[in-house]
Length: 112
Image 1 (cartoon, rainbow, N blue to C red):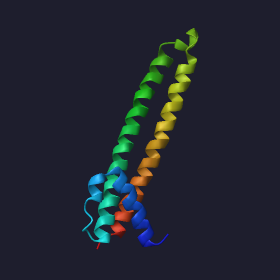
Image 2 (image 1 turned 180 degrees about the vertical axis):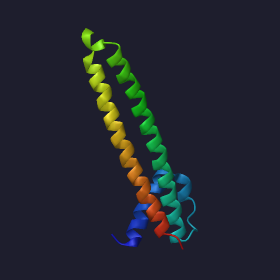
Image 3 (image 1 turned 135 degrees about the vertical axis):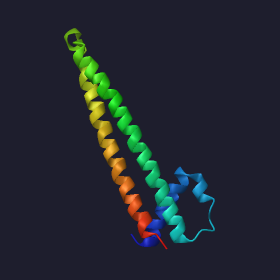
Image 4 (image 1 turned 30 degrees about the vertical axis):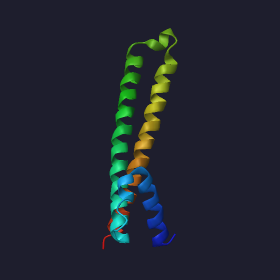
């Protein structure tokens, strides 16, 4: 993908996620690409925190289910469910973290 295509794709995604970025059509291509990439990096960092928070909430629930001997009363599926959710959200956080790194790199490359 050439630089213009990369910029266009990043700008379209950023414009959809952040309508205010789409309003600045007078900006030069490198400046707009940098702004779009930085906005997306910020978004991804926020999503990392949110995913980790959800994982933490489910980890606490899993610990309660394990400690409360719910498994002995037929609730062992709840403990497994919470552990699965924790694992999933940790993976999501990792993916968002990777995307934030990529968008920071794109922003650095777009510097004038």
